[in-house]
Length: 130
Image (tube, rainbow, N blue to C red; front, side, top):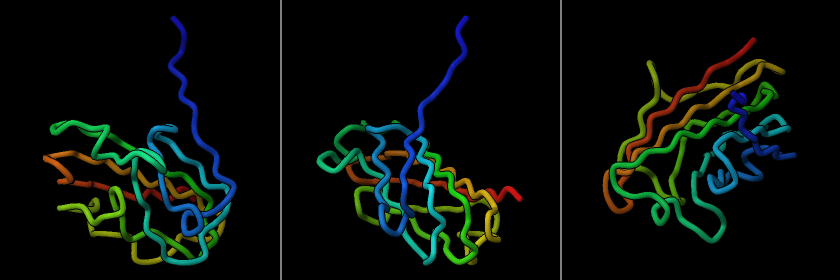
């Protein structure tokens, strides 16, 4: 059979400049500029569609954000449709509190569970590839 391949969205910018992850464009986003500040990732349908409107209760979606670190920025917060989720939990010791080293590859994996209308449980982790 044919291999399973998936497109990713390449963003020629950084998260603080383009913070919206539009899942209607795909679930994997590769930012091609290193972050220079602390920024918030926002997960939504797209610019005219909320995630709430395209997901039913008891559905989930996983989004992956990949970038090269600039050594100065990181993402300690995540929103859904521009709002803080009901629960945001980070793997192990909590949200990132400092930048990775320059040119490390950072991978943020974010899983969003819809538990009711505009009710979200978000679990996330950041992996750093040296």
